[in-house]
Length: 61
Image 1 (cartoon, rainbow, N blue to C red):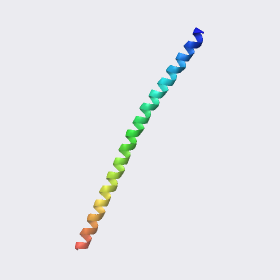
Image 2: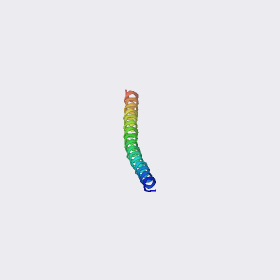
Image 3: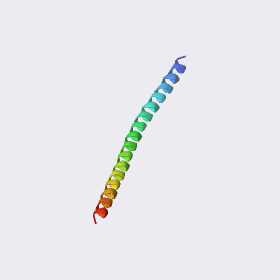
Image 4: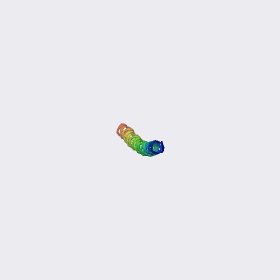
């Protein structure tokens, strides 16, 4: 009986550690994804601004 309870506690600890690891991992992935999205959107925004300003400059000539 005692041995069975011990193995239950061990499996619970393993599941708990796995949940913590998955939580930390998903948090890191979430941050990386946000950084990638911000970087891509910033690059796209800069590209659009340069493109529009080029068109305005070429129209003025």
